[in-house]
Structures are given as C-alpha cells and as structure tokens.
Image (tube, rainbow, N blue to C red; front, side, top):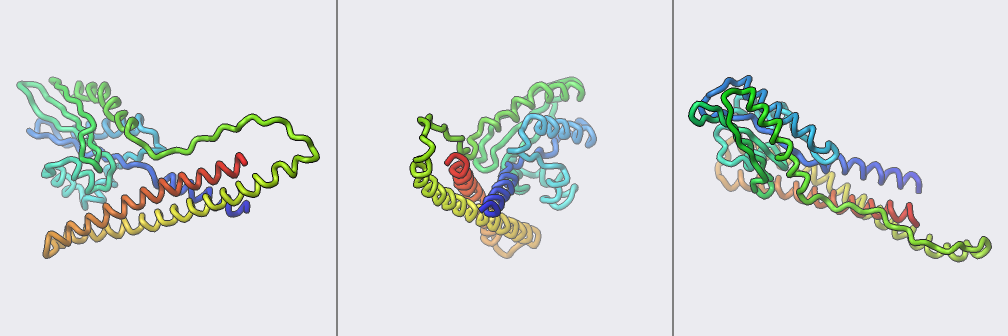
Length: 272
C-alpha cells in the first residue's frame, strides 16, 4: 500500500509541474525605427524580468527568447513574424503560450512613446495595457518599472484550477479503550476503499493527460511541417492546428480532474 501511495504522489507532483501556464514576452517592436535593436532587446528583457518577479513560478513559466525562437524557426524569422503579425494572440498560439505580451515603440511630436499589451491566448481577449511617453529611452524604463508589475498581476486574478481544501475534522467525544476497535473498524474499512478508488481514478486521468501531452507535441510537429512545406490545401493546415488545440484542451482537463481526484484520495487517506 505504501508503494502505491508513493507512486500516486509522484504522479501528482509530475502533473503539477506540467500545469504551469506559459507566458511569452514577444520582442518589442519599433514602428518608426526610432531606436536600435539592442535598446529594443533591453526593453524586452526588462518586461520579461518584471513578469518573472511578479508571477509565482509554481503557476507560471515565463518563456525565454531561445524557447520562442525555437517555435518560430530562427531569430530572423522571429523578427519577421513579429513584425507581420496582425494579432498578438495569434502569435501567442504559434509559440504555444497561454498568455502573451508585447511592447511597441513609436513617436508623438518629439517624444518616444511606448505601448505594452497583454492578451489571453485562449480567448484572444485583451487583459490590459499601459502607455507612456518620454524624451529618452531611460525614462521608458522608468515607465515599465512603474506600470508593468500591475499589468502582469492581472493574470493572478484569472480563474485557476479547483483546489481541494483540507477538510475540517469534527470534534468527537472520547471513545472508551475497549470498544474503540468496534466503533472505528467499519468507517476505516469503507474510507480505505473510497480513497483507493479516488487514487486509481486520479492516477488514470493523469496518465491519460501525459499521453495527450505527447499527442499535442506530435500534432504541433505536424502543424509546423505543414506550415513550412506549404500544403496543397488550407484545410490540411487548419486541421493540423485544430488537432493541436484539441489535444492541449484534453490534456489540461485530464490533469486538472485527475489532480483533484488524486488530492481527494490523499485527503481521505490522511483524515480517515
């Protein structure tokens, strides 16, 4: 029984790591080529650093520049795709992110301007943004430091997966020593089978989620292959993306429901 319990607990911890939501900070763009590439990169790094400091690492994973480039093929292609993208949420889907943010540099009169937007990739909804202007790049950094934290904190208010709370233990009268075994024997036996049933159901769903995660990776590889090989028909390309989205949704459902069932089984083991 101990070996089974430890195995299920390890599965739960593995699922917990997989349930991080991905946040992509896309390279900052300059609509009028007002500043250089190194300055744009520094502004992007400051946004990414702020996101890492604000968001809890157990729930959110901030993607690195390298991981974003890996999804888009190369740095040159990344810059091209970012400039040509008409929808930031669509760009987030291409890098398999759950949330996506990007800054844009412009000019108004003689001042530099900055606009940073944050999108929920699944819904395509704008979650928040901030704007500002400055005569130099240094004050743009001040604007980011002042406003980016509040922008990224909006993700913390999004609905999260259901967490099983620790049940309250009802106060019980002391039980005499001799009849104690007779009184508690039946409840313990019943709760044991309930706990095992919850454990097995949760573990099964977690395994199913792991398999769906592999399906998702295969579907994404197919999607990228169709994208670069230019398929004969748009239908094949759309179908590859639909398969990826379907596998991702099923994976998340299996992980969430399986985690809830497994946590419930562990709670029954502990309290009964």
